[in-house]
Image (cartoon, rainbow, N blue to C red; front, side, top):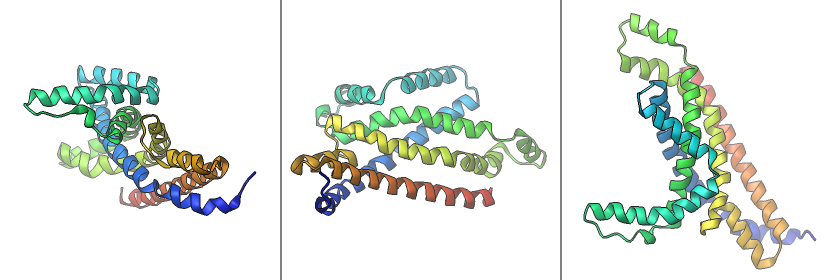
Amino acid sequence: MFDSEVLLPDLWDILGAVPVTLAMALGIFICSTIVGSLFAMVEYRRVPLLRELVVAYKVVFKGVPMVIVIFLAYYGLPPTLQFLTSLVGMDYNGHSTPNWITLIVALTACVAAFQAEVVKGALNSFDNGQADAAYSLGYKRSQVFRRVMLPQVIVAAIPDLANSIMVIMKALSLGFAIEVVDIFAQSQLTAALNFYYLEAFLIAVVIYMVIAYLVTYAADRMERALRVWA
């Protein structure tokens, strides 16, 4: 039966995992956006060989389930780090790597493939006629990118980038498989203590909904502000 009396105590327990979840999500978002943007530029500029490698990367990481990538990173990242550090003369125990770092690396690798598509779509939406007009006015290539192209690309990418934040938030729940505690994992742990699973999961749903609303609201405000500037 549903017991409303456990809602408030469970809420405080689950809220404790919100800062950690948001910090990991922000880290993954920033890293994956940077990597994805570099991949998108390689494709947009049609850089020989690198373009083929980027396409192969996207096929792999968009096709393989994230949970598999997480386990591959969990078992493969520590010995890889230990081997790489040994090449530069450092004695590092790779198995001491925190699981949350492994999760961030794994999800960054996956999300970067999708972020590359987001940025690539925004780049392709840019009207090259504007660049030609800027060149005719004496703009340099770097000036065209910074003053004409970049503002419009950012505005075009904001809605999809906001969606990717929520995708990352939901993907973080997979981290419970390698003992990383996020909002979802904390709700499971809280419910395991009192067996009120329905109440705990409903609280998690509300928290996710509030975060989704705040992200959407912030993205809409940012898009409107930048659209005027662009």
